Length: 259
Image (cartoon, rainbow, N blue to C red):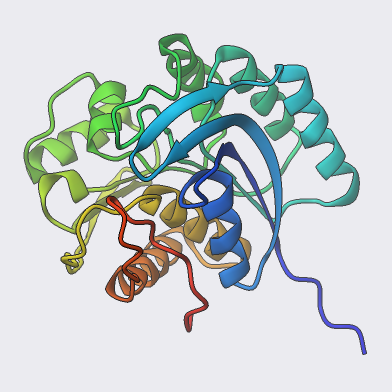
């Protein structure tokens, strides 16, 4: 007997050779949610939990070919977007999205935890102009939000001010403030998602994993607030169970967990 088709979630992001972030983390999270993961790779990185050592960016025409090949077989139920290294990549993704009537979550990856730049300045501006109007949700962390809003963020009041200044549906992640409280801004309203900070040290790939989990919940038919809350609770449990790999900035290591 045939089983029902699982929701299809497409991840458009960079590859992490250590498997802890990027496309690899996205696909693990998608599988853990019972969804089918398709992918288009925007960049190849030589990286591990210690840092990014090299980045290779294929031509944007190749990214467009990957996206077209996915569309030929699948109609994504949700799309997660991560690292977009240059303006040409942003344009290729924007062209693709205009033909895809589904929820889209953008994790505006600009700088790796190690400090390595992953997107050129002009790519960030291109995201603002070409991608932000097409997004269901942005998921910036504090440093990314500071760049996008053009202001320093040191407190919850600053987070609220930055969200209003960006004036886009977003989940502003508060981890860099030392707390596990995230701010959802949608339909002109602010809503705090309070959480427990898990003492597990530095962790590689949490942003990728969270944004992918949100996309999965949207693909499964959950509303935006519910998708964010469910993804946050799920990631918290992953962090609670995070194994010790004996390396710095250890990856979350997505495991099958009850959803």
